[in-house]
Image (cartoon, rainbow over all chains, first blue to last red; front, side):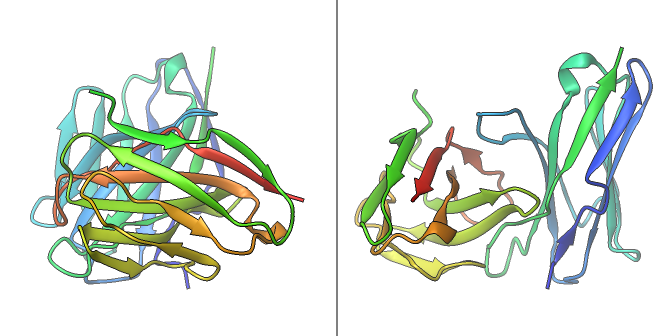
Amino acid sequence: DQQVKQNSPSLSVQEGRISILNCDYTNSMFDYFLWYKKYPAEGPTFLISISSIKDKNEDGRFTVFLNKSAKHLSLHIVPSQPGDSAVYFCAATEGGGDDKIIFGKGTRLHILP
Amino acid sequence: NAGVTQTPKFQVLKTGQSMTLQCAQDMNHEYMSWYRQDPGMGLRLIHYSVGAGITDQGEVPNGYNVSRSTTEDFPLRLLSAAPSQTSVYFCASRLRAGYQPQHFGDGTRLSIL
C-alpha cells in the first residue's frame, strides 16, 4: 500500500507562472517531509523539507505547505523557470521512528516557454 | 569532497549472475540507503543502515543483500540476478537518522538479460 502518493504523473506550467505540486500521505506517524528534484541521468537533489511542527517553509522560489489534518503537502514554485523542468519527488519519514524515507512516484513538471 | 560515489555507472548481466553495486561516501554520514527506480514506480527503498554494523530491510528487499562494515561503504549484492531486477539503483546518505535530508549518488543503470 502506497504511503506517499503523488497523483499527478505530469504537470505543464507556463514560464513565469506558479507551479503547484501535490502530495498526500497515509501514515500519521510521518513527521518529516522532503521534496527532491531529479533530472534525467542524475541522482535526485534535495530541494526543501518541512517538519510536522510547521505548516510552511520557504527557500527562495520554493515554498512547501503542510496540512497535517488532511495529510497533504504541496510544493509551490514561483516564478517557474525553464530549469525547473524535471521530475519532483515527495518523501516522508518518521524522524523519531524507524527512519525509513519513503518516496512517492513523482510528478514530471514541464515549464512551457 | 566527492559526496556519494556509485560504481559502476552501467552494467549488463545475464540471468543468474551475481554482482555487487558499490557505494561510498566521504562525508562521515551514519545513515546510508539503497533505492531502485523503475518507470511509473518512483523510488523504492531496498535496504538501509543507520550505522556501521546495522542494516534493515526497506520496501523491496527480496533478492538483495547488504552489509555495513565501515561508515564509508554500503555495497548492495545481487546473489542471482533476475530480469525483474533491471532498474536504476541509487545510493543515498545522510548525516544521521532523524530530521536530515539524504544526498544521492548519480545511480547505477543495471540490465539483466
